Each structure stands twice: as structure tokens, then as C-alpha cells.
Amino acid sequence: MRATGRELAAQGSVDGVLKVLAQVGERLIDSKSGVVALFPGVVDDRVHLVAHSVEAPASALALANGTLFRMLRVTRKDLTRASVAVEPQFENVRAELLSKLDAFGAEIAVPMIDESERVVGLLALGPRAADEAFELDVVGALVQQAWESIERGKPVSVVFADLRGFTAFSDTVEPEEVTETLNDFHAAMGAHVSRWEGTLERFTGDGFIVFFNDPLEQRDHVERAARMTLDMRASVARLRDRWRLKGYPLDLGLHTGYATCGFIGYEGRRDHGVIGNVTNLAARFSEAAKGGEILTSARVRADLPDSIATETAGELTLDGFAEPQRAFRVLA
Image (cartoon, rainbow, N blue to C red):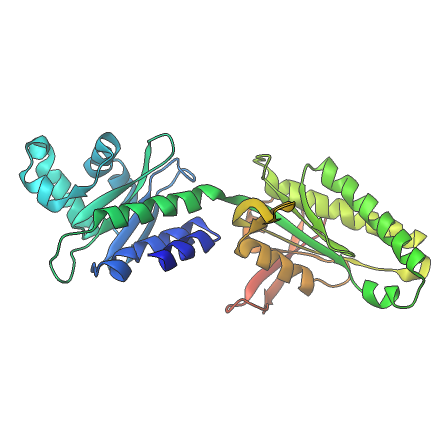
């Protein structure tokens, strides 16, 4: 149970949390299958549905508007096939409830409840292999831990950037010149972070990490991130004139996705940061960028307005990712 809890907490996306939760029954109590659903309006306007060892219901939206979901919202208690079959309170909806449990291949349905006591989703588990009773307290605890992991995660846009060749430059000049150059760079980049209301996670010498949509919610966080990177690239072009022959290009990586946001560090020193796969992909895009490129993902490109021009950069093989990633250049 502890290992499953740690895995839930480590997920960087909503669907990742749901995938782990769908396997809880099989891992812990020998249930034959699991289906997890988040109701519309929790994360976005659609039903989020993940099935394990069973075929997912054909019409998730119909189920979301059906008797099973409504009953869970009203009672905020576990529903079991056995209780539905015999308890008088279910007499008028018994047949429909049993058919909905059939659609999930389920013996029980456990509600997921938020801090305001609103039911936001469910975990439906298939029969146990040994035909034993369910440990509903164990299952319910993990359902609620999954919700806490989802609640901590939110969509963010992350920007990584660095100055290529800076390490070689710093090895050949006096420390004062290195400091002056970095101060110029940080001042120019920091102005753009402030203008577009990004959150600076940290400067890393000749690079930095910025994210959007946390702690300030920004519906246009993808566009803000892209426009900030374009402004930054233009500023570096102007800085190169002042840096004379130093000529460092600014290489940028941009990605958006779900991440866990919060304070990272230790007592006395904590930074506000993001954790999740979104940060890894943005970093890899930054590493792959060349000569002032701004590389981003297909997901970001799909969310950009038509006023921001892009072009395909093909599929990139990136460290830490098993499959090639489609990449696009942000142009102007």
C-alpha cells in the first residue's frame, strides 16, 4: 500500500494517476479489473476514463449522466453489487444500477471525494479472484490519495533556456567579465519573465527555468510562454552586439503538460517549482535546439494562436524518452 501511494504521488499527469489507481485492485486485493473515471468539470469538460484488464465502457459521457454517477454523488458512499441487489433504498433504480456496474465489469464502485465533499470520480473494481469481501477502507484511502495527487497537479507551460558555449567562454576570460556578461543576460531575461508574468524557478548560471499557470492561473499560459521566448531571443540578438565577438545563441525549449507544483527544498531554503514529465521534455528540447532555435512539442503547437508562426522540426530522439518526439520550431 505504501509503494502504491508513493507511485501515485510521483505521477506527473492526471492520466498517470488514473492508470496507477486502476491497477490498485489487482495489486492489493486480487481484483480482476479496475476502471477509474473523473467526472466532467473536474479537470476539463470531458470524462477522463482509464481501464485496467477490462474493456472501457463504450460511452463514457452517457455513464457520466447516468444513475450510477448520480447515486454516488448523492450518497457519497461505496456501492456494491450485493447491497444494490437487496437494500430497499435501491428498489426503484436497482436494474439500472446493476446494468451500469455491468458496463464497468464491476462488483463495487468507490467514490472519489474532494475537500468540499463533492464526488468528483469513482474507482470501479471487478470481482476478487478468491470471492472474498473487499477491504473498502484500504481501497478508499488510496482513492483519496489519488485525488490529492490530481489536485496538486495542474497544466503548466515550462521554458528551459541556456547560452551555448558559455562554459568555454568563462574559462578564457577574467571572472569580472563573466559576471558582467551574466548580469546583462539575467537583467534582460528577467524583464521578459516579469512582463509575461511567468514564475522563475531558478537561474542556473548561463540558463534558467520559467513556468506559467502557477501560482497565478493563466488561461493563455501557452501563448504567454511562446511570446516570452520570442522576446528573449530578440533580446539576446541585441546583447550579442554588446558582447562583440562572444556571440552566444540562446537555445530554448518549451513544453506544456500536467505537473505537480509546490515548494521544493529543505528547511530554511525552499523554491517554488514544478515536478513532472513536462519539465523533462522541455529540458530535452532546449538541449536539442541549435543556433537560437525555439523548439516545442506538438501539444504546444496545437494550443498556439494562428498569429504565432511555427514549422516542423521532425521527430527527435531525446534522452529519457523511449519514443521519438515530434518537434516544432517557433518562428515569429
